[in-house]
Length: 173
Image (cartoon, rainbow, N blue to C red; front, side, top):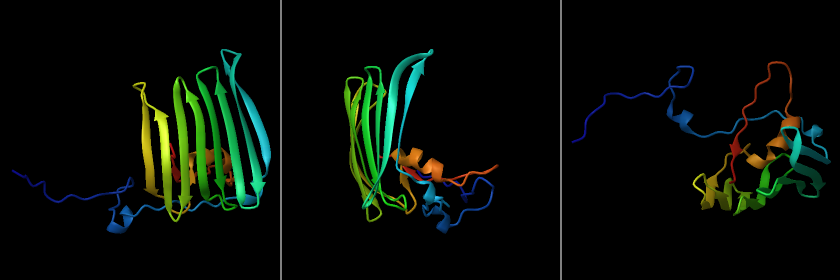
């Protein structure tokens, strides 16, 4: 038999009631310094107890239809990842791909962003040692970035003392 619980209300973290409009997912509007976005290469070495254990290289290129961010990560013999994200001049994601291996398992992401949706597929290792294949078909609010774009977005934020940023991120994997 069903039991009644009485009136249930929902509140925000600051204690104010949340209305029906508050349930609508909205990406925060970021005030970005897009002029700071420049084509560049970067790399670093991953150290474990002071010894080289891997590396990461990245390249940001400006194209005719926007930007391409490519990253290669290598950690010893157990992580080899190649990631490519394309996005518009306004940092709107268009496509994210990733291929490689984590341990013995293949990793793959192929997600396209268009018309307010992220669609594609992803294969990622799970804690239990298996690989999980996922079909991606999700609504994405305007202002959302792909998780692989975060290192590109960080320099465009308007940093100052006490700054705080809310960034809507879609995890394509």
